[in-house]
Length: 123
Length: 161
Image 1: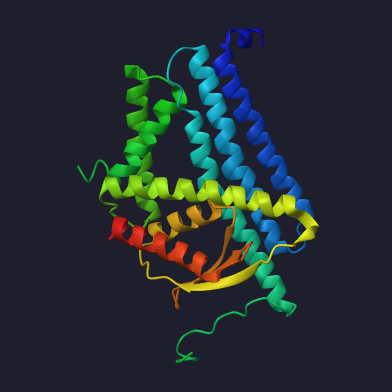
Image 2: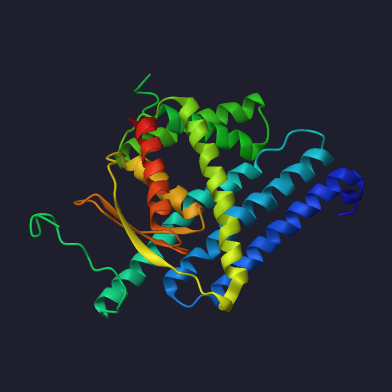
């Protein structure tokens, strides 16, 4: 990793700032996972890492390697795209499973399954 | 043209991804990418996906910027809620909204946007009622969240309209 010392100071500051900030956001997301009390609140915390964290760390990586190789580097954008596209799949799955479990257990404060329109015409 | 590229946008996207992954635009990479894009386009045809026609590039770009701003704002809001900690626990809750989106791809995009925004989590979409149940972390004002989703819905309707 000695070639990293070739990075000019201005770029090093930006790259370090973004990488540390992104890592911090991901850490705060994990802290949130620990601190929140209900399952549905916990669904929100990891998305910090998959939006803000990934965005900043990938931007840092783009800037770092673009400056080092003095050409445009774009393939980190693919990481952002894939993470953004695939997160809803797992989050929806978890959300639906939790919703199903809570409805079966008849927990309070959980919205009930809506009836089909023909059984309940006016609401 | 349609027989060779049943999903033109998908094929172009696949080619772009291939070029980005290889980080080169050499003729060899280009040919390999084109072959893959065409082949995978045919495979996708077998899956029988719903076809939709996104229009008006300018609107898409504007929507992207609006979403990016919302994601940043929501990131900061959720960080504030977490750091605030036990002193003031978040006032979270469920919200239901009736959507008027028929296009499945528009719905998928809406799901991506709402998941990428840390403050909101997509829970359940009822196809028959066309209503969406979602969870909001900090419900200071219900109308703000409903307005946000409503705004996304109008934008997506214009794009996929």
